[in-house]
Length: 213
Image (cartoon, rainbow, N blue to C red; front, side, top):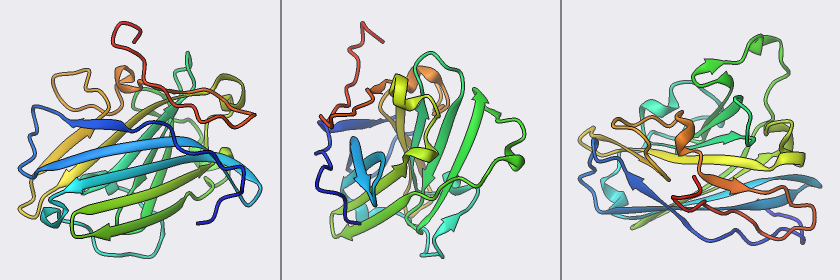
């Protein structure tokens, strides 16, 4: 994945935390950086996920033909929930280490978009996975056409999350913020990362202070 010369460095690392109701037996740290990036002349959102620590203890899905697939969230999966501030609609993106991905538009919380079948196919994200003994990385680029239509004018509000599965089948749920007693990535209280629209390219992703959110 090669980006244009005017690609801008991702903003500061954002740390995901494990929900206390689903503790993880592995010693892991999960971070994400985000920023606008141009690829093949198209502006999009670049997400850089990093899992550090006991990644050898993860149960990762086998490699599959890259493309859209359902139910990726049932296993190890990195996710992004993307909305415009003040709007009830949002998009859910799932990225599997298998190379598969999913994109779902919603009109409201857990209400799938009406007439989704009549919509044109979602533009495919560009995904690049890398793994070493103690690190799993993903570069995910979402083209502008896959993002909410109002993003150029209003910016984005992101909820970033991960489903982690250990080799023994234990699942844990990670996110920037957990607003409820049970994991719920669709809860708008978890969409806490603001990405202003950026025509001049300054990297900009900021997480509101607890008082502001």
